[in-house]
Length: 160
Image (tube, rainbow, N blue to C red; front, top):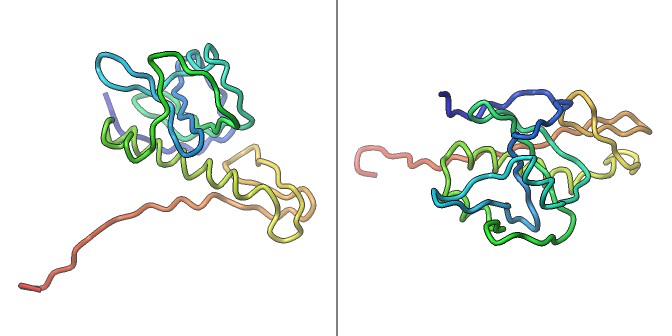
C-alpha cells in the first residue's frame, strides 16, 4: 500500500462515506481516540456528530482515501472518544503523511477565512468550482491559496 499523501487537483470532487475529514475549530483538529492511538474521522462519523460547516476543500488522497478539510464555525458536542487537540500536538501523535495532510488543510482553511473579499474592488469573493481558488464576481480577480512549506537547514563549512 502506498502511504504517501498525494495532492490531487480536483476541487469539485464529491465526498464518499469513508473519506477522511480534517476538521478544525479555533486552530484545533478533531481526532478520534482508539486503542491503537488516534485517527482522523470519516464522513459517516462527521454526519453522526452533526457538525455544521459551510465549505469543504478536497486536499488530496492518503492511503487511497480522499481527504477533505473543513472549518467548524462554532463549538459542538463531542462524544467521549473524540477530542480537539492543537495541530502541533497532533504532529507528534500521528504518521507524518497524516500531519502533512492536516497542515495543508489548516493552511487552506486559514486562507478561506482571510480572503473573503476581493483585494481589488472589495466585493465578496466566491469559491471557484474547478479548483481551489476564489474569484470575484465583480472584477473577475482570482486568488489562490498560499501554501507555505518550510524547511530548516544548517549550512556548515569545515568547523564553522
